[in-house]
Length: 328
Image (cartoon, rainbow, N blue to C red; front, side, top):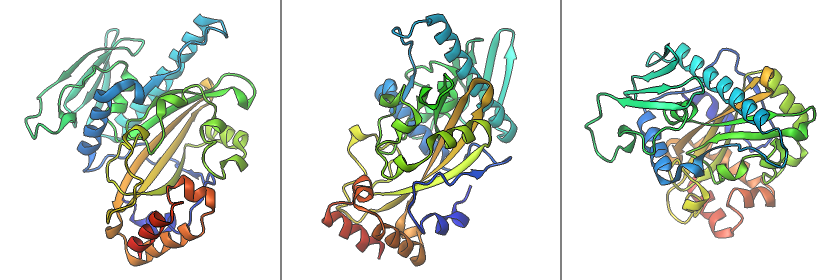
């Protein structure tokens, strides 16, 4: 997917409004020539500490009904995982999926990986053939380490999107929560720390999001759609994984400046009151933007309020001035 047609519109303003557009039959996932770079960074994140980037909600012992909680989580994850695979198979010729008796088989010709999983979607075995003999720095070409845990983990590790799964477990909005994250390329947030939080709390640190009608947005996303939306920020690093622990991307003290865009796709599953939230990150060197697009970003920055500048890492005068200078 090329962003050329959308880029000028995207950078013309900065807003946290939902701005949801019907995706209709458009692709949930986008695979391009940079797939290997994404795969490498995802593998590096998994090897660093899988628990920081992939986590599912655990049983709440205080709540009780342990068996029901476990069954509910399994049903949710199986529903969204198989839906993701169906979408991939329908629109990506490199991917196939079938069953051999009680075993599911997920094949990806692009990564040369074949993943075998049981009926509960726990991974049984991974076969990588032929193994890649290119630059050894391409960590994504190696056997996945640590081993894939679930089919959800395996699929998410081989696409360019990060993935979140939410679910509403009661009649009121307050009962929705983040049930699973597989986010190896976060933009200055800690995925694992968000498990169990509701829709409003997760976005509580984003200036302006408190004014949003979260109930209305949640209902629309679960029962309608799928939807597509975009947002953008600036960073001084092209690295995709900008987990806060890495402390990168917001120094703004060099001549490096990149536009970091997120394409977000939201797909609801009313039968399980679930929401699949997919994040595809694009990083563009500002030198690849035309003068009008750079002027638009300057205008958007100049219109940001104090809280928004803090959130974007531009509250310090030196950083602010350097960014404006680079864009000028």
